[in-house]
Length: 236
Image 1 (cartoon, rainbow, N blue to C red):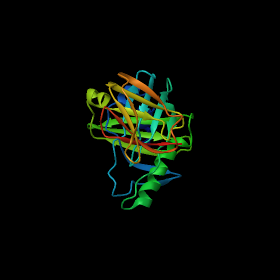
Image 2 (image 1 turned 180 degrees about the vertical axis):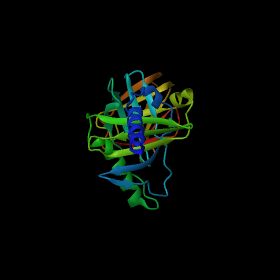
Image 3 (image 1 turned 30 degrees about the vertical axis):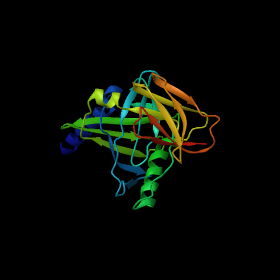
Image 4 (image 1 turned 120 degrees about the horizontal axis):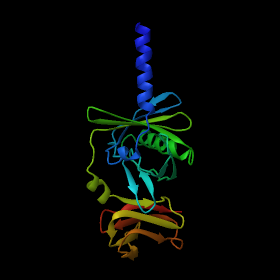
C-alpha cells in the first residue's frame, strides 16, 4: 500500500508540473537566480555580488517577450513561446564581463556560465516549469543539454512599475544598429565616448527607436535615455 501511495504522489506531482502555464503568469516577478545545475553539478552564485532581478516583460511592438537573466551582468533574450508547450525559443545578445572587484574570477566564471546557458542553444527549444507556493514563485528553465537554472521570486511586481520604467537596449555588443524599446516616450538620447564627450544626441519623441552606428569607430560607449543613468555598450 505504501508503494501505491508513493506511485500516486509521484504521478500527481508529474502532472502538476506538466500543466501548460500561461506566459502571462511569468510577467512582473522579481526573479532571482538561485543556482545552476550543469552536467549534474550544482553551481551556486559566488559572493560578494548581490544577485540582480531577472524580469520578463512583453514588448508589444515586436509581439515578443523579453527576458533579462541576470547575476552580475545581463543578457537580452527576445523569446517566442511555443503554443501548447511549456517551452520557448529566443534570439539572444550577450554583454561583456566587466566585474573586477572581490572574487572576480569566480563571479565572472559564474556569469559566463549563466549567459552561455542561453547562447549555446539559440533557436532551439527551452522548457520551463512554473509553480507558486505560499506566495513564493518558482521557475526552472531547462536547456537542450538538460542543464537547469532555478529562479525564485518573493515579490510580484506591480505591472505599471515594471513596464513603465524598463528600457531595453540591444544588441550589445552592436555592429550596425542599436535598438531602444520602452513604454515611455524617448525624449532624449545621448551617446558619449569613454572620455565623456557627447558624440550623438537625438530627440526621437517615440517609444521605439533605432540608431545607426555603422560609422561609429569600435570601442566602449555610454548611452543615456531621458537623462537617466547611462548604460555601457560596445561597438564592434
